[in-house]
Length: 297
Image 1: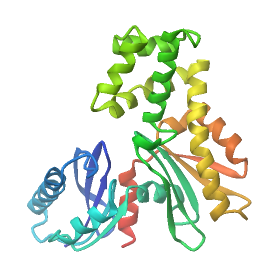
Image 2: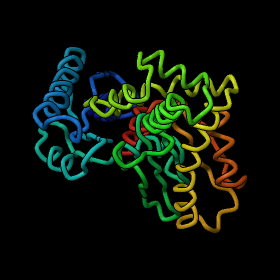
Image 3: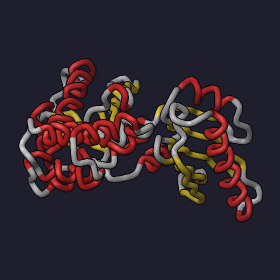
């Protein structure tokens, strides 16, 4: 029997599926993130190969004659690393590697022209032009920005809290949240906490749910934090639209990630992009985009 493997590998989790020729999922695996920018190569190798082996072993208990014809990998991190990695995989059929934007782009456009904005721990924009070519923008990582992302919201929130503790910004519910979560009650201690934390990017991203929850309750500081962050992402999206879709009267724009589903984010995006952009929330997980792409191979 002929089967296909799909892998969605991000910074926080890696998901594996085994599908039959009709695209029906018959096996799944879930593990930690596998971004080679964040993990040593041997750990990445363990995550991918270990789960592939386990996925196939379980499947062969039910289908002894499993033959994998295709493997599709949508992966975060260096494309060169993943191309080299894929070239060494055995028993996985014809292997294709793409960056991790390919999955949400498929969910947003189904292979048609359009674009998707994704805001998770990090952020990026992916687009498919009228000629079918895929394009990628942003995704620079936490050291260089990632506007609209959970990291960026957390960064902006903690910066606001530091200014409040210094006495240069009005005390707010959001500032108190930072103090309560960290236990840091003066500006110097709070600043030092994040400058000395080796996983500061992750710690900052964990504040994002506090911001989105407060924004849904119409907390003005939270709304402004989301507006500022998402507007910066929208400016990049506008550049992509002007380059690829300048003549489009209506343009589908997928919104991926909880941050972009908030009312504050949608308002900011509409104001920045214009009403000809049709904002569509993406509710399916990225692995569903991988499954749909596999079905076309």
